[in-house]
Length: 492
Image (cartoon, rainbow, N blue to C red; front, side, top):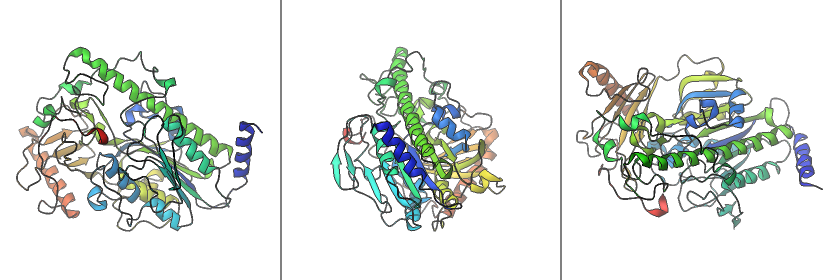
């Protein structure tokens, strides 16, 4: 029998395994790493074509203003799973395990009779590729994984290194698990992509897709007047535009205008990895459609955090600037409208309560997020208009201070605590997002905006205090300043 006939037979078999009307939906959760919304067609990219992801948005709900509450991979992933801020779940850096006893939404669905699987990049516990609680099937790898020929641990049973491109291999693993599902049991599959995390290596077929597209440094890279000094100090570091650009620039720091070509090459490669993610989405949706499961499957597609691509002279994430905290979030399936764009601010914290409500499962106790099911349907007049952001200085990546900030519908206020209870030593940032979405004009020291700054400072302090994060309780590392040395090769 040919491979096409085998696939068709499996799809037909799965189609006969339909559950009864009103049964809980299946869940396909797709998580990308460092994915900027602006790099997707449905979020307005003029260059990156993502027809399969765009089709999810057209058939479901797209959140135009979705954010992470800590722009760092492991803390954000833990928040997505648990509905908790980083100070609650305890994963404050990229080396900490998600506490095994902490409830999360896939585990709750498992308790409700779902078959559950995680396939792909887990990235909480750098050197651990063993299965985690709450999943029937768990296939992952240590650390970041590689774009080509990653070594995988398959459900704790064996290690193997299938040749090929990460995005293709992880999709193969996901489809293999889906094709083994038994009739009548709902399933929840989490697929964690490596892409488009650095270092960026596209599939060969996409390696030169964007060669003709010129990519200059963004205007905000040079609009640093009135900004905190640490931003200028970061320019020539691992996380600055004049630094190594994740190895795309071999000689650095390089402030020459012609060195923008290295920056352009980096962005081209980043975009190329996203095209393979779109192919993966297409393969998964095609299988669900062929097997008769698409219309009874909730599909959630998102990124764990945003990414700075030259804005304010920076690369990477961690900061509270818009490109760093904005994430794509798309949901399609039973219980959701089609073709709707939501303007209100949604957070990584909201994913767990929303998925559980759509599946008819009990909510997680003490969740700090809110389900957006009502918001997506008939609207929610009581939806949040402001929230706070947190990030703690990392000695392994000493390029970003401690951050505590308020993101309101029209304004943003950011402060940088020193970590020892003394007054902040960095200039804060205040932006009128309605008038200045690119955050070019820091109004924190402008007398005409002193009243607005004071109001937002009070609001931020109140939100933090409500979480037990008053100045005497909010524990964070000492800010040891921006440093020039590169991070350890093993953790980049």
